[in-house]
Length: 454
Image (cartoon, rainbow, N blue to C red; front, side):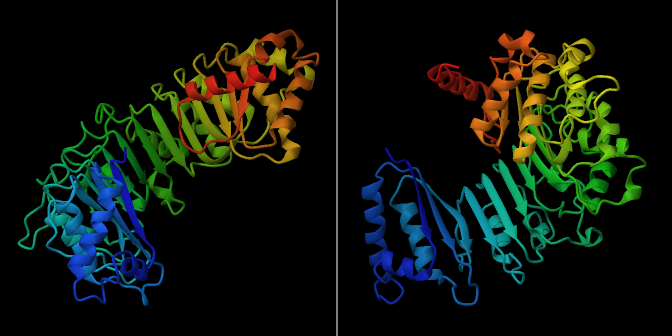
């Protein structure tokens, strides 16, 4: 039974055609009523309606206010749902709309100030549960929390707040609301560029409700987080996932060392079990910060984007994080082999020097590897399996037949042969960008392996 429906118009002509040429018709309301009636026949029990308008040509296409707003009004009055505006882009929005639970606005127009969206959000502050603004123009986002009379606006029902693409604003010019708590019940906060409020406004009052956080540690954002002590070791106890992007233009004098920098990054949501770090410190600097991860032993899932780790780096991370079950990282090969240890002696060496480590590690994912590197990747997977007793799933985006052939070949060689029964339990699969339920993947892979007789 259909309970949610999404209406997507790519061009104004599609709206005209769908509603019976409503723009040219003198009886716009009647034609839209027929269109809505048809939707109700398709989904009589729908509880949510999303209307999307997507256009890439800003000069040619601007949806007129009357048909779009009449469509919203009809859907809201003739169905059991609260209408959701999703990507009205670009459209003349009726500023009198009220009672909205969801508002999403996206625009690539560099001249778009987003003022209409800010005003509409403010009008619906008491009911909005989701607010997303993705505007590449210069937007005074503080208008969301400031009334025309200078007072502040509160969004008591807002659970999800997403801000993307906003141009950098001069934080010194932005007003500060020292006692204001505009977003007291946020569960998800995404800031795609930098904190546009100039202070800790967006973080106030939601330390115990926030469950998901994604932000970039730009110089402005980093200074705000440090100055206002937004995150402490015991704050934000319900945070489950933290995604941090490390800006390439980070001020080198903001932190004394790479270790201080990584310690700051990991202090953001210190108790979150799932951590994603985009563009972290690269090169030799990363090896020096691995011990800092040990200060956050609660991490269960770790994803490091755009950094290549050797097998020895992976083992060091696993040893530093005893609860780690799922690791996502790029791969740079085995690394420098210990002096005097020939290749076929590596299995015995890693067991003697590192096992057991990472008793909870179950999955290691790494992105596409050139064909020439697949054999090295297989060798590292097998070596890691000898160190981590519960490691049983490797995800690599490569030729699965080639991966399997190398695995079967290596298991029969001198170094790995004594451990063949353990290594045959290993599963492998394709790279998955999302952080997912490993147990479900393992169950599916085991069933597939059984059917192949492996």
